[in-house]
Length: 73
Image 1 (tube, rainbow, N blue to C red):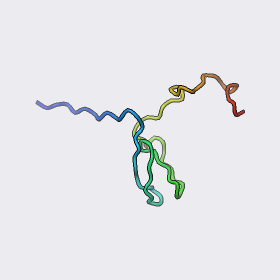
Image 2 (image 1 turned 135 degrees about the vertical axis):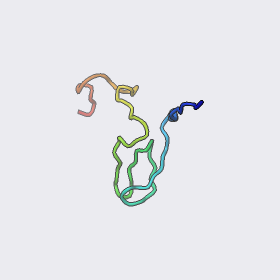
Image 3 (image 1 turned 30 degrees about the vertical axis):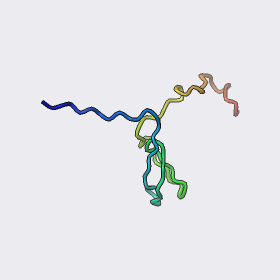
Image 4 (image 1 turned 120 degrees about the vertical axis):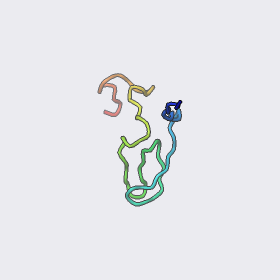
């Protein structure tokens, strides 16, 4: 009898990950597979990350209002 495989559970918080920059080869660090190279400016697409990005509504500091709540305008 075989045991069904269970997908790995991601860690509870963000994980620091490392990779080589695809443009210049510099070793770079990122959060959950999202990288930005400080040497040449290369950035990978956000969809390449290891977990979904949080929604704005999940942020405890997020306001539900519209443009009138924007303190920068």
